[in-house]
Length: 311
Image (tube, rainbow, N blue to C red):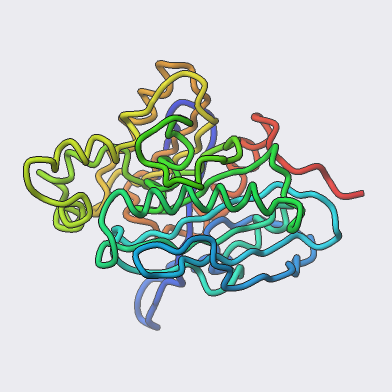
């Protein structure tokens, strides 16, 4: 059902409840509608919510984010989340209900909206992701963010944004003026994201059209695709990176993750990749959802990124 690649971790995701009929064989539903499930007797964390905060005005729009702050008044590490949607659809989650496991681990959360393709093509979404990190640094004191532990997290095209946000060098041609002062990213959580945009333009399955629209056409298309590809920025010293991907993913080719993991490993960047055997584009089982929670805890602990236990 599943096997390990590079490290002895098991991991998975869950996105939505699975339908079943009275006559069909029972398919175990997810434990909760969570991205990461953890078996825990701990009480639910009720975060302090700060909604609809404008972090950037660009292309005639206010780009907004939500903060789900750890209660208690003490500094906490923060996970900045970027939603998927092939760069052209979807929006930040409406609540933190699907991230309760991360709250229970002691993280604050920042959920980010960004410019989609019909508003502004590449590199706009990446610029916005980087600007959201700049906002986190500027406002750390107000929300008790621990700038020594800022993690970026994304799924699908959001995984691509998390990679770009965490891997772009400080000096680059992408960041917007005023968004260059960013915290050091301590880790990247990439769930079936895109590491190399170029191949998608030729053999991108369902993402081919979306990728082409996002990077644009014409003679500069391949150059833009290279500039928008995390694989371009692989180098020693990058943050520890946690990757999950199904080997039967019909949306983002599985090779996007194996290629990235191999490149990071060669440069001795801490990386964990778990292959979900037969796994598609998310929507994994209860067992896999619990496995990812266990794996994530182990990965964070190994890299000294778990929040300190509350007294």
